[in-house]
Length: 54
Image (tube, rainbow, N blue to C red; front, top):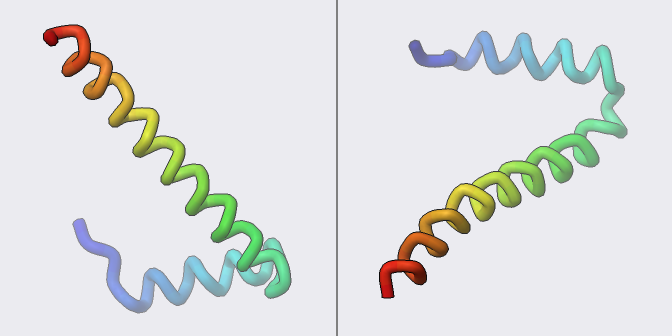
């Protein structure tokens, strides 16, 4: 299931209506940091497994 351009525009319009145009950059920054932390957290157990084997 892919999200098309129309769906993205609708979601963006709803987000602007709910949060306002000034809050969108702040929310995207927070979302980016959250994704980065999640990915590093997922990579950490793999690194722990590698160090345990050695």
